[in-house]
Length: 294
Image 1 (cartoon, rainbow, N blue to C red):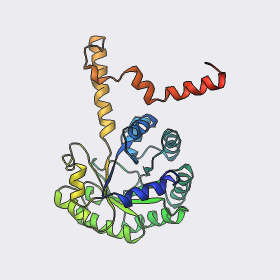
Image 2 (image 1 turned 180 degrees about the vertical axis):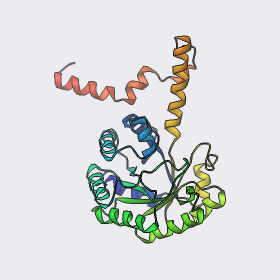
Image 3 (image 1 turned 135 degrees about the horizontal axis):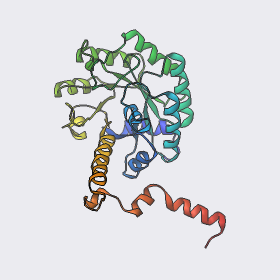
């Protein structure tokens, strides 16, 4: 796989493995840590990007330019394929075209594009609505026409099950159409039961599910999803929610007690681990070589 593009690497993983899974990353340090942990591909969550980069909820205010700049830094510390959430496409056909072309050039392996109205919102928020299906067809066709690398993966997403005017039946209908229109795979959000997941897994083409703590999918494992026919699993909120909770605990301890040695030592990595994760040794060796330091 060393001589393959990241897009081709992702296609190879999808073909060779019965199921693939990835955490959702959102900045260079989460990207580096996920790769060091052994994950062979990564999912870049728009919700987590908004949360960590501009401190907002997932309500469609994180712009394409902000995505692009952060992704460049993430790619610089990673070698594995990334599938990037591009929300509703940042506007229309021409913005979709720009994003696809630039993501290909940057080395992104593929994108996820959804059928929500604009501005979009997290699938777990109230008031979510999906666009008429013809509008999503335009989004998919725009992405397909824009891509120049046949390996670049188009993952179409439907949030119809989270729209209280639609439901899972509509979501499954849309998933089938998205694939017929040329999407390489489909993500169906917010299944409510094992029957829903099984129905998604029986669609006959690569489908993704997100495992979200505290939701209807939260008690499932990757092995469970494999048994139900799912091909891709993303843990979209796990890292951000763990980080938020850890920061709450540490900040409260500092504010109330003025110290951190009262906390579980395992909550903190060592200085050596921090240096290793951030690539300190590589920089030090480079500097020594340039300055001829023994």
